[in-house]
Image 1 (tube, rainbow, N blue to C red):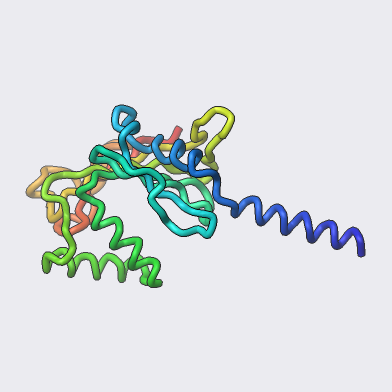
Image 2: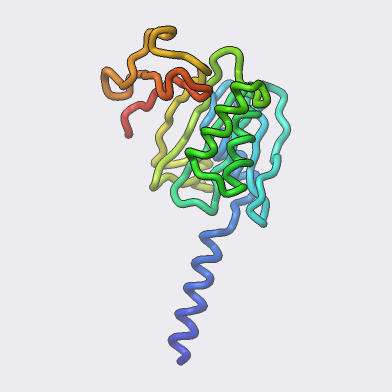
Length: 194
């Protein structure tokens, strides 16, 4: 019985420590690594409190907003995006919090963008994503390890004809247009994994 209780306690502790949110400083340090180095010092950062709620961790003064990795999800995924994408990103988070599926979220945002309710960027705007199934923040080195970068340049309503881009990569990691003709049209650039 004592062995079972000890095992149960270790299992609970292990689950608890994996679900714990890292400090705000570590969340900021990890999230900023998704953005261009020269823009990190003045970027805003959103992250998670001890209850798993998304909060503003740092108010920035430039055009970059970074989103920390969600500790409740497996793997690592942090992103930085241009402020002109703020409404689009916030609306997506809001709809997913309501339990909407990915396709429902896309349909709702498409309708809202077409009607003008959802403000979309008027010029190309970039989302930088630092991700990896095995990626993690190393508090000793201050670096996110085993991660890759992906670049998404939103160009709402762009088509192959208006952009000249292919609809699939011509070479590994080459740019291509995803969701052409929609509010979420974007140039996808996924460099080969390290």
